[in-house]
Length: 159
Ligand SMILES: [Zn+2]
Image 1: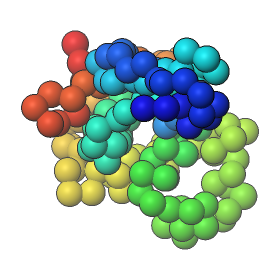
Image 2: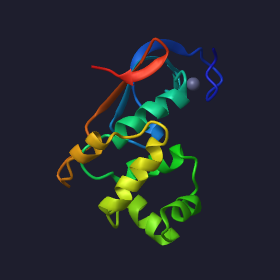
Image 3: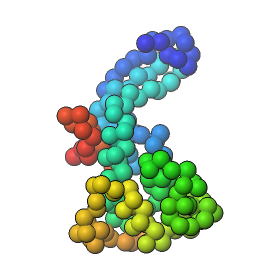
Image 4: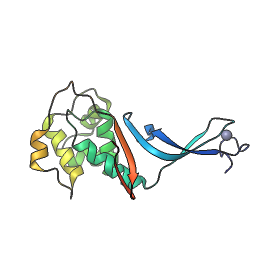
C-alpha cells in the first residue's frame, strides 16, 4: 500500500507494540498489532482491529483503577460515553466551567463525582460493591501502564 502522506513509497507492515497516544492517554500500549510505516516520510499507520472493543476494555480498566481519575482519564471516559462537555455537565449536575476545570486539571474531581462517573461508565457491567469499596484513594497513586492484547477477538489486558 502506498503512503497516503507522501504518495511515493510503499509502506512496510510489521507487528509491533503500539503506544496508543491517539486515545489521549499516555499509559496505554497495544500489544502485537500491525503497524504500517513509510520509510520515506516516516508516516506511521497503526491498524487497530475492533477499536470499540479496545475502548470498552480501556474504560473497564480505568474505572477499576486505584487513585483519583486523572484529567486525561476523565476526558477519555466522557468521550467513551459519547458526551460533549455540555452533556457531561448536565449528567453530572454541575456547570460547564466545572467540567473544564476537571479536564484541564486545575481542580481535582471530588470523590463523589469520581465515583458517579465510574458508575455511569460501568452501566450494565456494574462495578461490584466489593471493587468500589476496595478502591484506594491516594493522590500519590499514578495510573499504571495498561497493555492490551486482542485475544480470541476480545481485547484483554496482556500480562
Ligand atoms: Zn510517506
